[in-house]
View 1 (tube, helix red, strand yellow):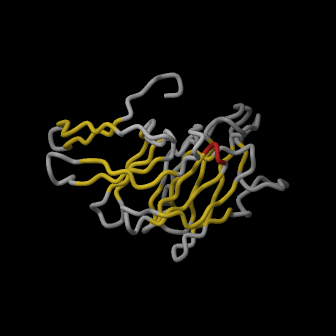
View 2: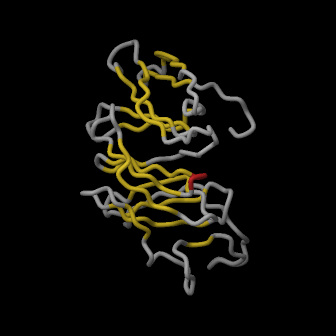
Amino acid sequence: MDNERVADVIQVWRLSDFGLLRTIPLPSRPDSANREPFEARVLSDGRSVLVNTYRCGFYRLTDLETLAPSAEFVLSEQPPTGSVNGCSVPVVVGHYWVMPIAYQHRVAVLDVSHPDHPREVSSLATDSTFFPHWSSADPLSDRIVVTEQGDGLPRVMIARLDPTTGHLRWDGRFRDAGSASPGLNFGRPTWPNGAAGAAMPHAAVFVPEH
C-alpha cells in the first residue's frame, strides 16, 4: 500500500453473488482525509456502517438497502497539514469505535451512537516507540489488544475499556518481567521453543480457551 497510488473509493458488493453494486469516489478534501480508505465496520445497531481511511477520515455508508448506496463524510481526525496519520484497524465495542492512530502515537475512542455525528470521548497515548495499528476486543472482558504497525518496537499492548464512559487505559500488569513499560516485546532472540529470533506481531485476536 505504501508504495502504490491507490484509488480513493469505497466499493459496495452483494455477497449472494459477489456482484459489485457501486464504486463510490471520496471527494478530495484539503486535509487529505479522503485518502486511502481502509476499514469498514458494522455498528451495534446491525445496520449502520462506518468506514475509516488511513488518513483518518470517517464516512457513513447510507442507503445500503438500495442499489445506490452512498458515502457521507462525518468526521476527520487528520490535522490541517495533511500528513499521514495511520488510522488503521479499529474495533467496535458497544457504541464505541476504538481507533489506533499510528503516527499520532495514540488510540482514540469515538462515541458512534449517532453515526452521522461521531465524537471523540477519550484518547490513550503511547510512547514514541509504539505506532498503534491493529486492535481487537476480548468478547469476554473489557480487554483490547493493540499491536504495532512496524515502524517501532515490535510490542503488543493490552488496554482496558470502560464500557460506560469510553475511557481507555493501559493494563500495566501486561508487561515483560522486570520491564518499566507495559506490553510484551517480541524483539527477543529466544522463545520457549528455542532460539527462533525476533518476531513482528502485526495482528492479534483473542481465542477462547477450550
